[in-house]
Image (cartoon, rainbow, N blue to C red):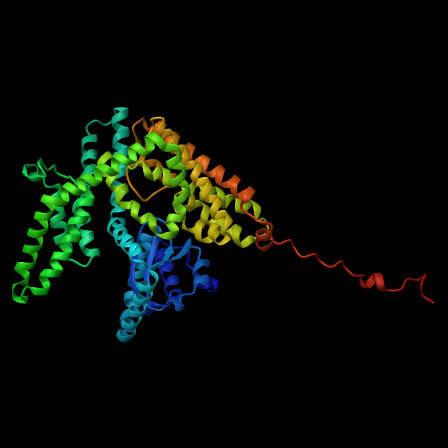
Amino acid sequence: MSTADAPDASGTPQDRNRAIAAALLPLVGGAGNVESVAHCMTRLRLALRDRSLVQDEALRALPAVLGVVEDDTYQIVLGPGTVARVTPEFEALVAKGGAAHGAQELAARGAALRESRRTANATPTKQLLRRIANVFVPLIPALIGCGIIAGLNGLLINLGWLPSLTPALAAIASGFMALIAVFVGLNTAKEFGGTPILGGAVAAIVVFPGVAKIDAFGQSLSPGQGGVLGALAAAALAVQVEKRCRRWVPESLDVLVTPTLTVLVTGLVTVFGLMYVAGEVATAIGTAADWLLAHAGAAAGFVLGGLFLPLVMLGLHQALIPIHTTLIEQQGYTVLLPILAMAGAGQVGAAVAVYVRLTRNASIRRTVKSALPPGLLGVGEPLIYGVSLPLGRPFVTACVGGAFGGGLIGLFNMLGTKVGSTAIGPSGWALFPLLQGNKGLAETAAVYAAGLLVGYTTGFAATYAFGFSPALLTEWNPEPEPQPAPGPSDDDARPTESTRV
């Protein structure tokens, strides 16, 4: 790509976002190669018809692109904030180009090929975890916004400021969490191929105050019992009931019979089974997390902080999302996220060591410089895929940094200082506004900051000392080739007066 094709940083923010979208589209094969567009916190996620049309190197060279990840979708890391603004511009360009393209047969064939690749490369466990993640990831912006407002409200209450405003802030921060089960139900039904509103309807039963009048397993139910796990199970069951109904209910009666039976059957199973079972599971999760950190916090933190990056690489970290959400629902914060965030600190420390050691590799040093700011804010993909993972050893030493940082946070949990987050998603410095625990905000923030510092320094030291074998240094940091000694100049070769005959 020529310099003229790069996004122009001048003009309005909308012009810049449109320019980024316009630069990305031809590099992923054009509008005709894009099957669907979505985004999460940091990544533009594209379903592509023909992966071979993507120009990876040119994409990575764009200043706005922080990294590229290939999973079940092609994911372009643009960073928080930017991705949410670029995506609509990108979708508009795809829609415009798609209307002109109009190759429906090619699209169907490409979709079939993509589905076959996905089926061949994905295990059932990973597919299930991805689906569960797809249920919760759209909720993260609301969790973050409400979590920050809750933290601000707590600070105002502690300081005794604006007492007339704090009740309103409490209502704003708590409203979403009070109904999060409904949103989980909507997303679950949508993800598993059912009618979203029916999933929301059965999930609403979980939080309805009237369930307190129902006895199940010899005890009265409590509104919210089972939480997001109960809502997830209820909505997943509703999808299965709905699909079975549509197989045998006559088409003329479908609009009346199918939704009625779906809500009735699933609702009865929910109040007389799922809420109780999910409530027991949720309680066990909270109890286990508290016991583990209270009795083996340092060891647990060391293991969790050290293994989180490999879990991300395997896609298994998605299994933790419902656990985080359950803890937030139960206790107001998740004690696991600050420990797992230490993996990003180890990654940052390792990247700085790479920058220091590879003094003659201008390409990697440029990548480190551009990826460090988002890495400090918890966006680790550019450092993982652009620096540590390609080098090999620095990925392992980054895990060591995460282990020591996580061990420190776990140690303080053992000593009675819980460090939690009121939302999932951010990490690094971006987690500070979401911190909460059983002590004051200053003490909680100080422990988290100490964990970050340990993660940075240990990741740096481990990488500097053990991250490079001699062969790796030879490959990535080669000695400059010796320049030939200058030969005699013309003046030196010209005979002098004393040598002339």
